[in-house]
Image 1 (tube, rainbow, N blue to C red):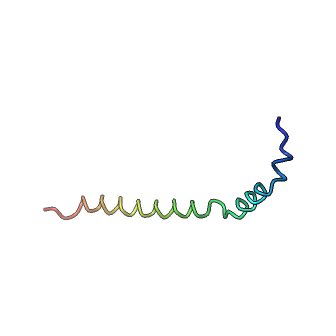
Image 2 (cartoon, rainbow, N blue to C red; image 1 turned 180 degrees about the vertical axis):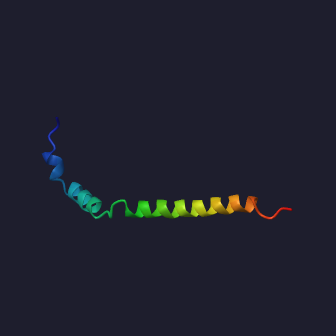
Image 3 (cartoon, rainbow, N blue to C red; image 1 turned 90 degrees about the horizontal axis):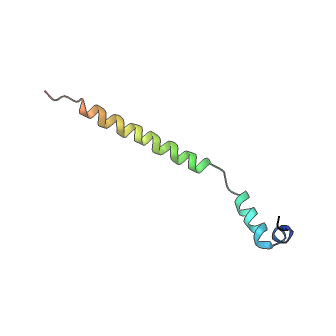
Length: 56
C-alpha cells in the first residue's frame, strides 16, 4: 500500500477537503428531482385528461 502521508500534508489536498466539506449534500439534487417529478406528473395528467375530453 502506498504511503499517503505526503499527500495529506499537501496544501491542495487540504483545500480540496475544505471545498468538499462545504457541500450541502444531496439537498439541491433532491429538490431538482422532486420538482421535475411533480412537473412530469402534472404534464402526464394533463395529456391523459385532455385525451378523454369532450369529443362528441
